Image (tube, rainbow, N blue to C red):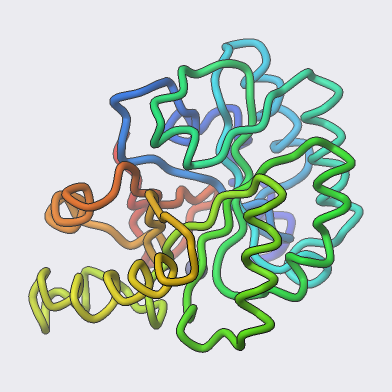
Length: 242
Ligand SMILES: [Zn+2]
């Protein structure tokens, strides 16, 4: 498939109702990727317009600033949010029952602590508070853990993205839901708590979720986050609930 054909079947973010937070009570949330190739910038801009016009919070996520998302692209999203008067929300805000208003919830996934730390001042410049969904936390060095603490001290939320970034439904099929919770979910929370964090949100690796996993997680987390796909992806069923 050519790039043009791919672009032609991309939904603008504004048409993805599932990525808008509508208020407390909604505990299974979905974000759409804004890394290069995941959403085009016009579609993202339309998504920000809808957040402003409908008074909802649009959920966007990325991975590695400067690598999976160019810094100028990230800054255009932040500037777009500022220019539309959008407030910043973290998943801790959602967990605390924040009502929806015209806003943006930006999150960064996985483990790129150096690149995340490097954008701390850019985020401050836009008054952006974001959520870092961290995987592989047990492999972070003491210096890396200090960097996580420094981000938390700036007002960003620290959340769980599993131990080894495996597909939850597959793991649970082999080891049971409780096995997945024990092996892939709880160790991160325990390590984060030992470092002074209080994770209240969990993001599924690859967005891969089931209702059964939701139930297990929601006994221990206020919020779970999946992802929505703005493009038709072969063999991938969009995991977000409508
Ligand atoms: Zn991830």
